[in-house]
Amino acid sequence: MKKESMVCTDFWIDSEGVMMTPQDKYFYLYLLSNSRTNHIGVYKITRRQMAFDLGYTIETVNLLMERFIQHHKLIRYNPESREIGIKNWGNHNPYDNYKHVLDCMYYELKGVCDPSLIPYVTQSIQGQEIRGLYESFC
Image 1 (cartoon, one colour):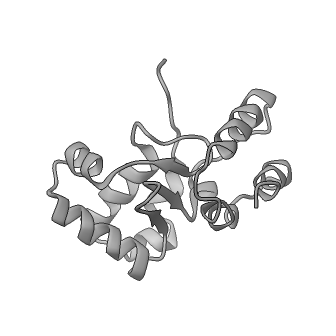
Image 2 (tube, rainbow, N blue to C red):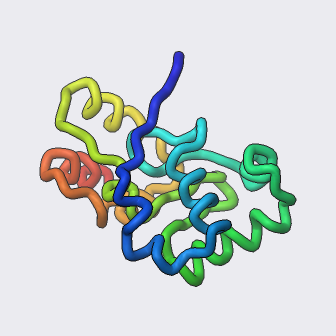
Image 3 (cartoon, rainbow, N blue to C red):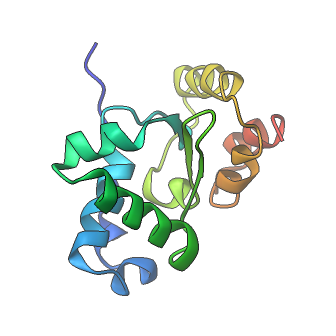
């Protein structure tokens, strides 16, 4: 089944993006829109898969991950569960409260192996109903 992702166009003018290098922007856009993303901003992905998709070496991906964790403070990564949490997911992926989207989000939240990533992503969720769904898993 084909999966689509919509990234808000404010991505290009957002305050966090202004201070990024072109390589950082490319990497961040990849994290927001790669084939493993889902509706909740917490998903499984390996560093090796990132390197393959981006055409980078593992070392470059490790450097970018470290920069996004320590400097930009925009992601968290659990190497054991191989899950990534995107801090501002809700700012870049606007959703309506359609029942099928909420059902999908519930199913995906239920499948998160590292529950500490959920409150991290919840910070950026604006809609009360969706935020409540996230908070029910915190």
